[in-house]
Length: 455
View 1 (cartoon, rainbow, N blue to C red):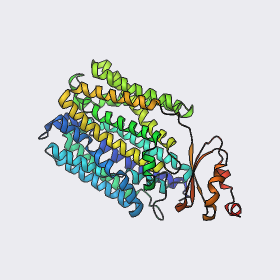
View 2 (cartoon, rainbow, N blue to C red):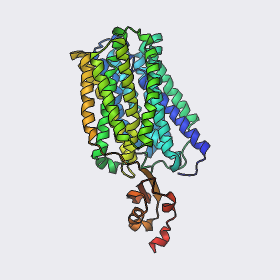
View 3 (cartoon, helix red, strand yellow):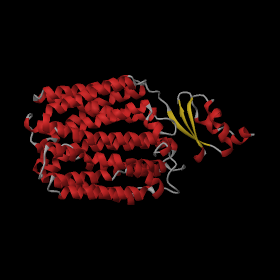
View 4 (cartoon, rainbow, N blue to C red):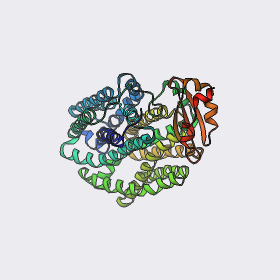
């Protein structure tokens, strides 16, 4: 789909980014408070509270790709609306729960609204090829913003009404997202589907799943979210008991640390992207994260601990920003949507495993073990990532073809300056290219007269 005006695209991207942010805000708000207030629930233990914290990740991982495929068949908006209603229902179940098992059920239902793939596909339906990368980046930025806001809002809301108020607010956010979807998000014209750079393609699953470089990144995002969930089973208790900060005031810790961490992160992002130093920045962020975890397991004096927490947020934010960029760079031509779907599945599996395993470790071995296990996993990740080749800064380009041009298009396009990889998709009559932007000129592909070439 092409020919969208800039104002139409802005409306589509802003509304979808807001919808996504509202949903993620509801998921993240529980992160800094569940372990503090969850002990009041019948049957609560550290292991079960950890399961409740990470439960949404299991259903998200299970349904992420299927929901995206259903949106190809049934339409984007109906699937996104269904996901938001499931998310709202899960929030209501969690808000009315009086036992830890009801809490776990509610969190599982929340994760059942797995609409990320459908939203990304809708972004592709509503934007031009030239602006799609920026649109996807805007959605990604909304996730980072919602994470930071959630760490501030969660303690504030829980201080007024505990976890029930927080979950009722989450249900309200889901309904607000539904209103945005129905009233503000434009409807795509024509059939959904066909965007291989935004949606998963079943035929590419095996090859993408076994791709060595992508597998490194998938293990990385699994580890990152494992550590995040596990740490938030221990961190709130330390802030309250060891540091002496009342649970209703934890937002006063998170707000300045997250703001300063974001500011500190920006120069490294510029160095990674503009100066093409992605690998050293990436490895440095992993090392910083691991050292922070190791330090927090031993030193809990207020000033030193908060300094280590600050470095933890720098490392986490850097990795959360660079991992999707690396995945996009290393995905094969025409396979970015499939790579993104598998990447998201690993991410949510990491959240589930981190909550479940972190809670079990805390219950049986104590909080210090949670930090040390996290640091050990990060060390293993660093070793794995150190063998990663420096990523090439390539761009993706789609070239429409005629049926007659298909037999010779691959060789013709591969001969163009700057073309690194060519993948032909006969069902779409299109070629997907990975190109070096420094040497590739889009007009060189657009100017090819395929009819004359066929003669």
